[in-house]
Amino acid sequence: MAWLPAIVAFPFGLALGSFMTVVTERVPAGVSVVSPRSRCPRCGAEIANRDNVPVLGWLLLRGRCRNCGERISARYPFLELSTALLFSGAFLVYQSLWVAIAVAFLLVLMPAIAVIDLEHRIIPNRLTYPALIAFPIYLTIARLFGAPVDLPRMVAGFLLYGGALFCVALVSRGMGMGDVKLAALIGLVLGSLGLRYVAVAAGSAIVLGGIAAVVALVLGKGRKAAIPFGPSLAAGAVVSAFWGAAIADWYLRTFVRA
Image (tube, rainbow, N blue to C red; front, side):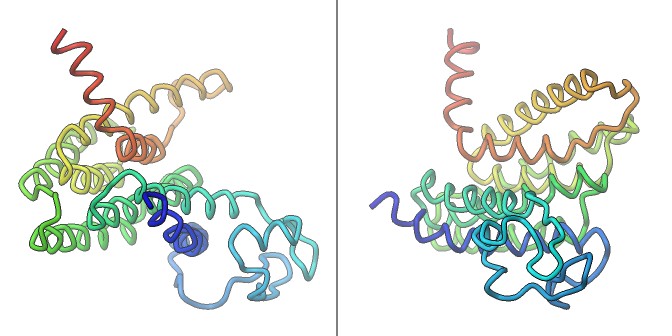
């Protein structure tokens, strides 16, 4: 029975992943994510409903437009599948349905934000501002219904993670305000579960950001090359959402209580 919520959530995650592929294309361009219907960028043909089924449609078309044969990037099924796995995975980790829903919708944003930041070097306000409004309202309602969330720690996580990156942004040209808002959002949601989750998210982001910088140097990018930090923040949130408690306990046993 523990798998049932995740199994039920998976198709919803696929649908959300399909929507997030639209978000990654249209939000940076400043156009509507609702209309018009998705089209082939080469021939302009509308994507038929039968071809718009997440992951399966791309596989059946062998990654090409049905009308003109233009190659369709594999990032679309990858984004759909990764979003679905993260969304449904939250229901495996968290017993409280209220908490699972909050974490699931936070994780839905992470792949899309990472892709947008990698491609456009921005984290759009059209994603972070609505989330920064919706999550506190939802978590407050969840608490009123008895969910195991901590509202003071939610505020503390928002201030600590967002505030820390805001200070970094003031003294560093490499940190943008989009990173600050994303960190504040992650701190807000994960902080409601406990500040140890925020600490793991921040630590993971720093480690993963360092690895990304080393990889960039190995690939020949100069030391002054801009490396987006949004993907590292997003990955840190994923690590903490799934393994934050275990990592925090291991750290305390190994380095603090020893």
